[in-house]
Length: 300
Length: 256
Image (tube, rainbow over all chains, first blue to last red):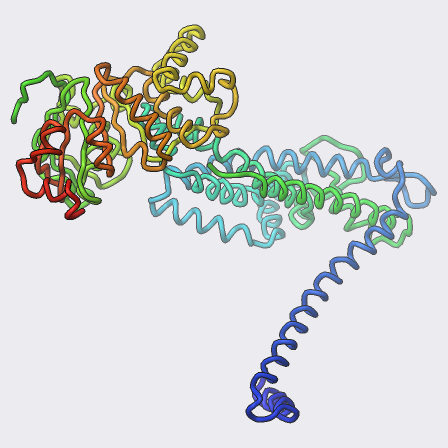
């Protein structure tokens, strides 16, 4: 707030409250603070709900059984065509990306929490993982493009899955690390005191104790990559056919929605809305369920 | 080195211990009588827990810790390089201050140390788990819920479960690190009872802040102060007629 404005407001307040009537001034300031913060929260919630409202309203109009059972059809064919290829493609990309990223991430998290917790290398990796969580995902896409698309002469499903794996990796690694660190050291000592080697202590006691925390963290990470578009644009690209061939361009829901939504055909635009609704509901439900689970879990 | 007039297969000789540069134990020599209970007492920070954790080399888990001197167990110096720590910890068990149930069933908790020793036979496992739970005075309470999670037990039950888990591999020595300080009086009494029951079957060393507890259950009492062993003697003697002034002052509550 600049000085002059502040002076003016001060003048305004002192105008109707006596110079010594600081109680009244504070009361008004208090009300003002409440009102402004309420307004800000209201604006935020309104934005969210208007997105949901238009998504539901327009999305439901485009909803049909064909959306899930048919593949893409030319826009001039009325009442035909769906997004089955894109739903399946998205599932394959997310699934393969998770299959690559999660094991590496969990193992990396084990290293950070158990073996590397006092080494400089461990600290650097942990810090870098924090940074890479916030790297714009399109940068990951271009990076993967440079070594998995360009050298092979074309977009392919592997590149898309690996881009997603690279995004999920630091997320999984950090949540695993945090979850394992919450397990008290006395638990580990108790296992050591029975003569267990370190790898058995980690497997039988630490990972088991932290299982629900690691599981929820990993699932939230999966729900994050499930809605990614940018890293797929340069990697798996898109196509209009049902395909499970990872060495060719693969259809994905997010990129298809992006293309359909920008197309001049009303039918395609409606399909895009409907798909966006399906995806939003899916991710929303996943998040709500997982956060519920996270609240309920208890640490020993 | 001073040999007592009793059977012993565990002794420390001129033991020094360092956390980094800080010396925590100074020239501690102690002969532990076999199959009896020895209590380590002394004010906070006197080194009694540090001393206890030397016997199963727990300090090796952390960097920068260093031992000097010898700890003889069955005639072998266990501080020597190349000592098989897993095997050592199979013979010298430990019970911690807080109950540490593993996130698995009651049965699997107790069987954990047995499986580590390579016992696979189901009948043998079942028999030894039952025996250990009976020794720990827990069998009747968990008989019907062996496959239930150990996390569902009460604090006192969890601590007796930890004891059963330690007893299952039939160690020669059990180290107790303030085993009742997190428990209510009834659970404490149960654990003291079971320690008395076990006397004669294994050597027990207990670190305790509770002097009545030391007086109630131990045969020998060792008083430590500032990393040094001040006085060792039969528990009756230490608590009625200590020969060192400082011991008397500590026991009568004048410091510590």
